[in-house]
Length: 592
Image (cartoon, rainbow, N blue to C red):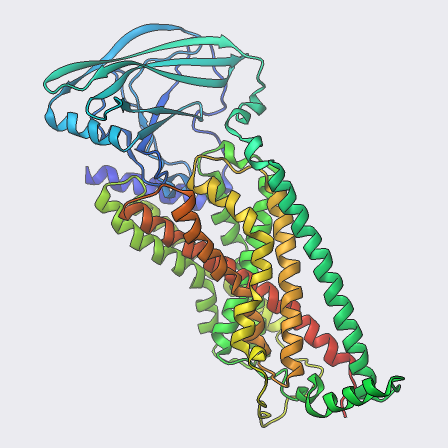
């Protein structure tokens, strides 16, 4: 047993490291069959309907398998292994276009422990999942009577398979043969297979699993339109206010023109004496506090943004939902491939701020996100192992992830860091930095950085919270997310709103003669993640029926990872936009 596990671990590690460079075949090869050719029915997982992520091996329940010889299966992708795909051969003899009348394939010798296991599964509404030619099939284990005292097991799997030419395009399962669970009896399990011609094209065979009425509901369209109008209004408002205000500031500071209105002139003169962003021109480009951590966060955020953009584009071009684990595998591969982005932006920013420990910064930037994800997964893995759940990450998968981190992500990050330090690591600021920091004057409470940070994430969250509902539902419920055009629009809207909000916040902060804009711009944009995580609590308690330690820890653990990654991305986007704005205004102003 130990030897076979090591073989599986080695196979998984090899496929993960080498797999992206090999041609991708589906589990059923090329999805074409000859008459009488074997068609494999894979049994995947079983688990409670309301806890989608809590899954166990199908044969963890005392089901019996058919008499046909077992076929070995290895995880093809890292995504399959991480998502708890546990394919086991059903033992049923199914051949292409060969109909099977109802026949018994095994018998369950129902003793008391087996009966108790089935009763527990029925009480918790257990469903199971199977695959034929990569097409998922769901069935319910059993049901109870109206009083909940008697429990019945579905014993007859009635399969109806549609074919178009030499390809399978449709699979339907009907559960029949309801048998009462009585201890010390034998329960025969049977199946039948019926083949029928279908007009469904092979490319469209997954359309039946999609839910257009849910994802393309008018509310979804309205939310996108509403967010888009908010962007237009916000961009216009910011442009009008800032351009008008900055024009007045430039005129006042350079003394190129005089105001016509005496009252306005007096107000502006008083304002210019006490306030003004020009007053801090000698400190605005001062290095941020904790530059090593700050530059690592900016680099990681730029990488997350790149990964999000590329994965969404790939998902729009390719139907990733048609292959098991393909979305997660694609995201991991793209994250590893975009590591130079992290090193470039993080390394160049650290060099501009005068950082000398660039190797330490490179390591922190490279392993910040992987350490957060792996640490959370490692904690949840203990709970999954305790529950004997299929979500428990195999040892071979852990080895593969470590190989990716050390042999792919780290070297590419090093390349990006060297390029960033050499190509754009020079501190070419438009203003000279004073040797002694200027004291920060007292200001109104609502101009304090802490207040700006708390309020900065409200508008960005408001632009995405409707889409969050659809994304949460696709991940935590039985929905397949496929409207990646919506997601792309939401990502663009989120970036525009975030940049606009952080620019306004930074301008008010600088106008109050507070030059601590770097962390303020980052955190005010990153605070969007706090509102997303707060919304996840609402979703858990009011939109789901999840329960139990496993599902609760799984939900809030991975929602914390998602929210943190979103916050780092928004923070980096906000900082990059604000940095360009600050450089622009101090380039154009005359410095005496």
